[in-house]
Length: 436
Ligand code: CMC
Image (cartoon, rainbow, N blue to C red; front, side):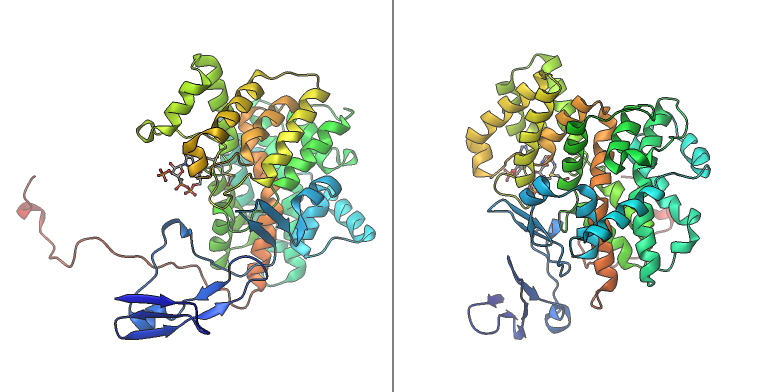
């Protein structure tokens, strides 16, 4: 009934007697797109692609991934070069402004961000209303959603100056809100920021609960900076697509990013970094052997997965995971720590990389496999791992939201469905319904 032909000049799709010529949307690198906007009006059919495994929802000039080759680039720059030579703040600028900053722009950008890291007293009421055991991702998502109520001056999503200010406020205040969420769980009050330490050093200080005159360890600060940078964008992943979907309705940056934070909390996405640590601890504490654990994750009926392994796009070693693994070694040896959980992780990886189940499915360690071990060594509690991912991902969410808002082809996100429910039937009054 249907046939698609792409070898000739113009790809076409034929459904019965309907023939549709498909326009090619060319990619600079990677897969080009087949434009199927008029499929429904021409053929009466829709595409069916659960999980959007084969659907490009937008054109984007921000991030390029080649999952087969293990390549990740932000605005054309390889992740390895950025991790070695750039900083999180510079990369944040690169993502949302499209180019690396000049020395003067970089200085202004950092100074502007650091001027805004404090949070208003109103947040005391908001955050203290949460139970102490509330997960910091829930608090962070709510607090970010509450921001438009506090900053009316950044409401107009069509005004570039307001959008730039919203960008700065979000990047500046989200880490302080994250730290406040942690402090709330510890019965501590609103955090007192120390911008003079620098953006990343102060995130570390606030989260590990140090006083203002604390002297940060440069190795730890640099490691955290690199970790945040590695998470800064990953094209159309689940949380970023959520940010774009929400923003496509005209929602402001804060509300859109708050939705992205909620999506990121899931254990198949950003929540995997917490889940990895829980898995490693379970193996250590239960006394089950690594080999037996691996048998369990391969058994589909167990419902267990090897957390921190596998990726929708990478069918090769995640290039971020390679950098993180090296960083884990550096941080642990600089702290003079031996972590038995790292030993378990390395054993799991070794078995998985040689096991047919993982090899056939091209399952490799992803960015989350080793990050938790580094955060733990730095002194972060497990509940802060996913919020740290969120802070790292902010520049990407912001850049993608801004790109979408400027794209004249943006339409409200509104997928179709293939309906499988009952055909039309008549309403039955309650007294006439049979009890099954
Ligand atoms: N452990 C065991 N089996 C797995 C795993 C895993 N971690 N990941 C995938 N599989 C199997 C899966 O059962 C399926 O097998 P089969 O073809 O026999 O049914 C096959 O591999 C393909 O899996 P999928 O679920 O269809 O693949 P997906 O692209 O929909 O899911 C994923 C990708 C990341 C959700 C998945 O690999 C996973 O759940 N991994 C563990 C969670 C994790 O580490 N998430 C972090 C992702 S990276 C950071 C981020 O995006 O936030």
